[in-house]
Length: 247
Image: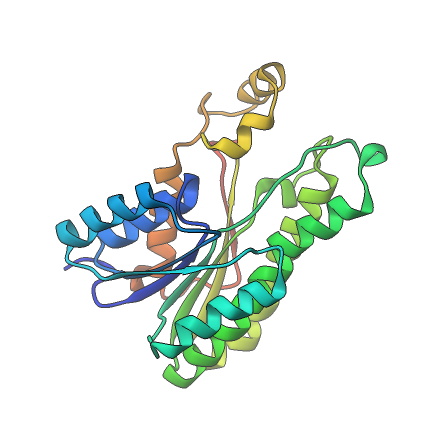
């Protein structure tokens, strides 16, 4: 039996990188998907058509800009019209800007918090109402080791990810009585477009600090998300789990 058979997962930011890997792993494990993205992506749609046929799952789409509250609410209203039961939420959509603190503008902080923190809050509030009625559910937030460790140039990004980890712990206690588990994943360096902003010199220095001497493949993060979304992790809640190769 597939670990997510019969479940429906709502995943944000799932047309590339970690989000795309999570979506495919979930489909492979039998989950029906609601994919939230900024805009339609024909290439990604073609790939999901293959997944749907190969794994026997249903895949829907909704579109919004995580920078805009009204856009998020509009997408959630569209999802609500279908009255789909959501068993798993993966808040993956995010953004990163790496700047020294003294060179950062307050707008950098506002944008980072909107996309990485306030947007996920809106989505969680919508999904939780549905999960509370069902007395079950799993919420998975994508945090980062930048929210746990101190690194030069990560003030804004790290603060937003620290906020999502803190919220994860609080919600795990508030929602436990409804049998809703809330956890976060804190990846280290992953082979995605986001990390292309990092200089080769800095990346080499970081590789020397990683016990496994390599960065992660997105699918390695996705497999942890599958575990947290499945009943295999039924006694795990309130955790921010590092997956960083041993930094």
